[in-house]
Amino acid sequence: MTRAQLMVPYRLVFAAIGLVAVGYQFGVTLTNGYSVVNFFSYFTNISNLVAVVVFVVGAVRTLRKRPGSRTWDVVRFVSVVDMVFVGLVFNTLLTGVGGGVIPWVNVIVHMLMPVAVLVEWLVLPVGRRL
View 1 (cartoon, one colour):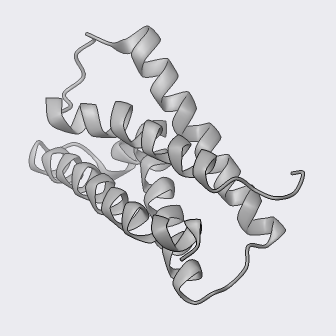
View 2 (cartoon, helix red, strand yellow):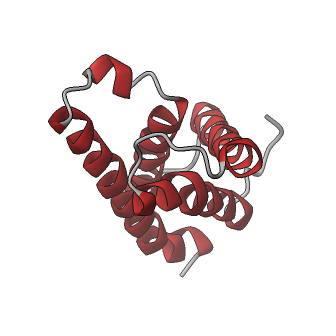
């Protein structure tokens, strides 16, 4: 079994965790009468959803034995940079600032997912210059 095949469950589990967290926060947003546009204006929400999609597509590509393309590598890289940025900004500048986010959702979208995306990148690095 290759490293990419071993990472399929990892990718799917973290995709599910990220989707549940963002989905729950979206539900809270709608329940409280906030706009959908407002929800999707947050970089954290967009970045986490992109990371979820990258994890799912990466797992499917691996299962279908489709090699990575240059475009796919760039999309993965952008997702990693976005998520690391989310983690760094939140943990250095925004920790302790209230914002209406559920605490467990906060931990997942600002701490767990950035680390998970970075680990996935380090375990499955791109074999070419971007």
